[in-house]
Amino acid sequence: MDPNELTAAIIGAAVEVHRRLGPGLLESAYRICLAYELRKRGFDVVAEQPVPVIFDDIRLECGFRADLLVNGLIVVELKAKSAIHPIDKVQTLSHLRLMGLRLGLLINFHEQKLVDGVHRIINGY
Image (tube, rainbow, N blue to C red; front, top):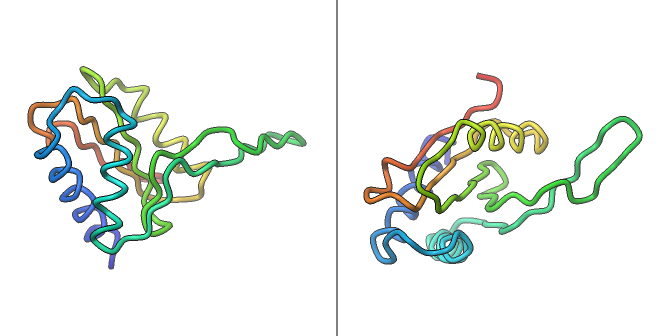
């Protein structure tokens, strides 16, 4: 499956979770339910993937945790807040760079229509 098809499938699963749960829950609830929905659809999903950060001679074994890593290709960062801020997009881009990945999705479940909260982030664009 190419990255565009994969992101479309992830967004479809997120829409299903949002349709059934609605806005207003904690981010952790959406993460668990989206991971479940993606696995149910046959995708390989790692939740809260620890990612090391290396700076010169310093290695932090867990510099951050990626919310979801789908098929080892797409990072999905989830939010449940009133609005996405520019720093959220920059944070997702930093995660992509540190993981050596090209494509990520930033999804804010605190929207009346989920599609208004979906942002595609590309590393190296």
